[in-house]
Length: 319
Image (cartoon, rainbow, N blue to C red):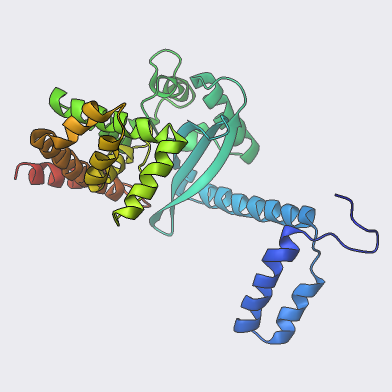
């Protein structure tokens, strides 16, 4: 769209950000301070450049704190994942000592343009270390997930780290190990979970079915109006999916009863008391497992904290 020469184009910053900033500054400071924001350039490029400058400044502060730590030692945690745009992203966090206490900070995010093998990950980390003046000799520990690219015994990332620093310790992330362990289900419960996923897929794969279920839930004044997809790589996904199906089991039974194509298959499941009992059990145990999973995440968590929480959870299971 062309813009008249005597008019300035409206940018996102001009339309939304600056008015909000002016209101905030006007509330906390004098009006004259808010007026000074009018002198700021309204170019998106300028704002982008300043955001990059802020990011660089934070990065320099983190690197300076790492180098200023006792003996300059630090540990890192890595994870490689593919985002929604199919771009492989390598994320790294670091833990070091500052003021006689542990401190955790985000270290970098680096896209992996081609393959995501152990060599590619090691080269990305090495390039960052070389650019920022960090040494592999000062890295005392590295935590990753259990992917072959990370833990492979021949060409994995940890093998290359050991070659660069034989004294560095390696660890398979306890949260990831826990997530892998809870994937094991007895055959009868696994069948119920598969039935739940089949119900969700039958409805969510069809926009018409999705709309019809929403209208039915509104008609019956249900607590929820839609189902959730199950994604295996999302650790809390199964619990959320089962909980939503358990909440809408009566609405789903009514929906499938009106659908001649899947009437017998799913209605029989939702009418079976044993199947409903197993669904309730899965909902209960998954909710507790997800609660433990969330409690293991966050800043300043240590292996000691993980072990204590998992042992407490095991003792509760015996009840």
